[in-house]
Image (cartoon, rainbow, N blue to C red; front, side):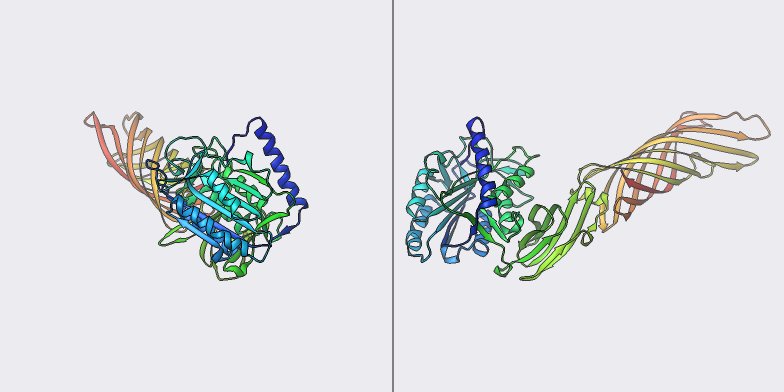
Length: 525
């Protein structure tokens, strides 16, 4: 179901939210009755539609959470991937006898779909399953409650829109059947929007957050039960947040008719079901990274309040908490049935520049101010070294750092009865690319260009007027950076300035090379 929220649509949405609030506040909850599920994922749609990457794996994730936490026995769940319309129809029909033979009343049928669709049908490997047929099959299956979850639509980039070409948005046709009791429809986007999948999340954005919600993140009441309304509210808010900067803002939709029935519990947070439990004691935005084969990917992303719980499969994870002030992280190894808590002191703060280079900083460009000193070789032949001090500002981005410096200093040199005093004032700009070697230690390579005003005075027995000139310089450099604490670092620069200046003996432009070493301290602002 996807319907633009204009006019009466806004009224229906307001009524829907009010109903959800009432259900959560006043309804008792139950996890009774037989449960059955048809879970469908298809990366391929019609000919010419872009092949999706994660529709089938999304179906597997939804099936797993429903069998482990949703009360659906393995023999009562049918998982269909890379399938066609006739196979789906046969699978739904095959559940009729099982639903009818179930000893419990109050049966529930879940139908989940991830893939391509339009306003009339699911697109399944070159075949189509009309929504009218899907609804009729669900009705005749005999369940007292049917829950449709549809994550479908069109095409994109880093966030990929689910599908390939513009078409009329899909619609499960709620107007003609929601008058019946026991129907709930949850879709990944509104009528005028596309549903998107994300390479970073390795799945559909909506399904990713829905599954996280079913695994505990949506349990706002902290009763270890995730209800239909809690799951939708969580999936809605997280999908909306995740697509704020995406090509399309995505609003999941929800309609239901639960006449005469209690609020529906979707999952029970039972750690004995094959999961371990993580409790987030500190509110914030968290990412949990796990291993997917040889690669690390996002296993969960959530906005937690104090006490939010999440069930995860046993294994090793990296947990990050991201704020505007910085990023903290912790490695976590979970055993079956184990519970671990994440408090403020359990997360090690990351150096701010490392968070930028890893692409996890908020904001993505970070400014820091600094000061330091530099020992430079002679600007001209036969002169001595110069000591300089500088102040700097640096803008760090993921693949590049840009530093602006103002420097001043000088030196004296005695040469055959001639004392030379040099004063140097200059400005330069450095572009640097850094590589993190270990935690808190990085190596950078860059190029610096600048100009200096050079003032020289001479002390001698004869007449020697002062001399002024503007000199240009360019320098390749290397930098070793140590993070002293989260928002402060020390940098050692080594390089050589190549000066272009006017020759005092031959006229014209001469070049000199002046090696330098510098040490600076910077703090994030």
